[in-house]
Length: 253
Image (cartoon, rainbow, N blue to C red):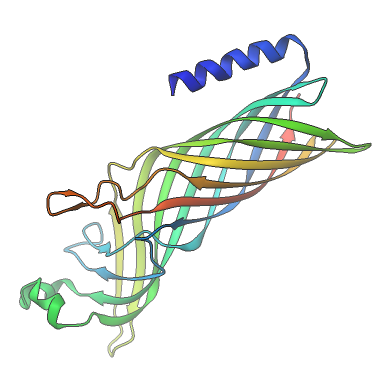
């Protein structure tokens, strides 16, 4: 990380000597986020605990898109030849989705003595969804190129996303389809969330002070790398982040 920041600083200084201009912008917009990999899922079930904070989704790493959003600042140097070096910094709220099709109620788990209960019984059928909500401070260095037109320009911006989690929760709700219908919820905090490093490609369509920005980022970090089985990490467990963003920018200088 220190090497990356030092390299970025050096490039800013070297590029700034011959820079045509320095641009500062405000960014905001929505996104779609999910996990990909062997241990992600589209459906799962809720195991009810003594409270919503102790209840949890059996597999919270959903491969269905959840609505996400974020905002931040962008600083970039643009040389006379169109070369760009920049840095985006902001705050993102990323949510992946899992459909819930069953619930194991807390009372039945203890009355029937888990884990034998799970081996002999199916969860109560239910309908709902859980979201793995991760809030991050995101740093995105990039190097790119500007293609200039008469009234518009296009910035091509390959780079990295580096996300530092500030909080993460497994939040969900599902209602049984049995009579009487009962609603079960989860609101469990997830700790020890790893720093998420993603390869990213972004592009911006600029007109006057405004920009339409789109980007796609594929995670290199395995969120399931700490999964333990038989006393050792299990290599087949794999969950990587996938993020698509669409937003707007306003240049303030």
